Image 1: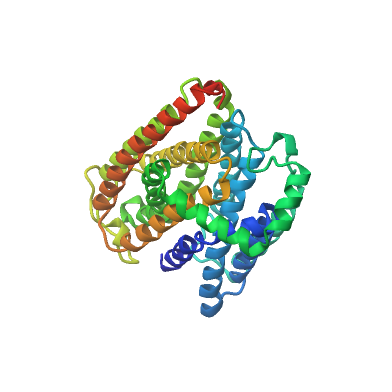
Image 2 (image 1 turned 45 degrees about the vertical axis):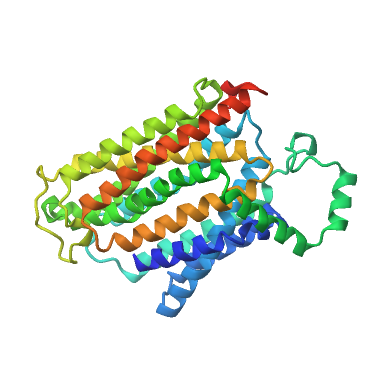
Length: 400
């Protein structure tokens, strides 16, 4: 937990400078260099030492901030108002496929093992390092959009671009990007979306760290309690991939905009939280290594636990795909600062959640997420209605 708290703490702070980095070197180089740091972080686990472990955690926090900002910028400049919803869904499904395939491999490869050997661990992390390096190199294959298809931010003709480049040096670019980030922070739309973003940070911590810990701590699940953690990750991945693919494919024919998807995500999450409340003991997040024998309101059920994993993944994809879509639409001219603010709020809330998850009982953690989820949904609705009014004056909203 402390490792993740360090990563997300550094991640949130680094988002303040990432628009400047992307403005200077561009999204493609930013993603490539960040990918190299990701590969380095994974390689540390091949032969971990405390000093390398925590040092790599700091570097990966910085790299993650740059990568997410650059990815958001790249997604936006390669999309328009008709394709941003589809592209956001496809991006999210591909991103979360690692949850499914990674956990599926671990579940079957390590099934029945009570001790993980050095050879098993090294094999996994060597393979992951190679895959990460290959993926990093593939960033160079991302197409560069045609100038005539870019938004206002990217659509200057060659002469204008040359004039801008000659008039502005890298320092000026960095300062301008930083100023844009600060201005965006206090706009009405970004403040409202920050409530929704904060919720995604809290539930990210819950499904990626806390929920698996809860499952592994429930002794009443029997000898399968540890293997259920991997199975839980698989079903979270299935929910994420299904949601991203479904909403990406349906975005072209969605005449009601993004609000129904976010509402679905909120309802799915609230059902999952209620079932978790009934199924998991309250002391599961803070149980000792030996686990807990406490009872919940119903007898702990493996089937309900796995169903909740799927619902957590599906609900998360609802919120994140629509946040990516609306940010790309509203801030097509300032996409890098907008995505930096988005990840800043999300990561700082994730870091806070990782901290309090070590101390709060399960029902209090669920209550925090329900409150933020409710107000986050309302705030998203408000921004989406404003966006609908903007589009109604200029383009076909049904195709967003």
